[in-house]
Image (cartoon, rainbow, N blue to C red; front, side, top):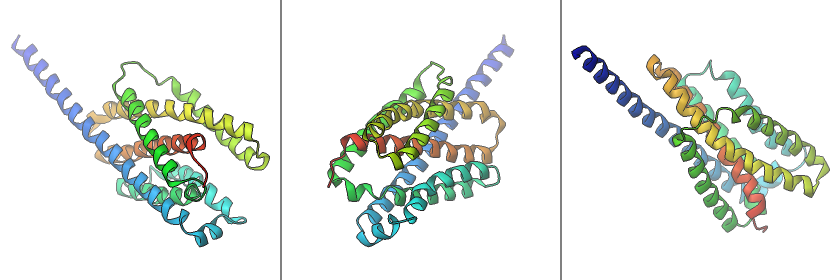
Length: 239
């Protein structure tokens, strides 16, 4: 009986340690993501309100470099993550966030500041609710992953094609489907971050956990930014 009580007590202590570590891990994920968003919107505001920089960056071939630079950096980050230290991964993420800000800076030239702020607030509320659902639900939503990733690939292809087609109907469809896909990804990614931590917490690999937090922040950051951009296409008022 005494041995059973000892095992039960040890298990309870271990569970408490994991819960505490998980909270710290999630705080780091959300904190890193928040800093990234701050850098993004600061860079977007600075460039978007500078007519000379907008003319330089979004004219001719340069606009394609600005447009696709974040996508290239995401693929590079995925390829390099195992070679980077946790600190290096965090620095790369912040650099990516700034580049993303430059890439979406046109929103401050095309849309009113009020509509951008309103859309940001709506996105923040929706993101918080969806992420909370992903964190607290007992339902396994890992099966959503393959479907949602295929949806993202389809969105990218359709968006690239529509650069040349300029079809309003396709633009509307991409925006509507995009909101739904990244809403689902917000819940999916949150649960995945939680489950990955629980699965690896017992290993004690602080370097892996540090990089996992950065990768988790990147995934949630992309969910937020994409949901914001798609919602802005519906809610944004043109200048």
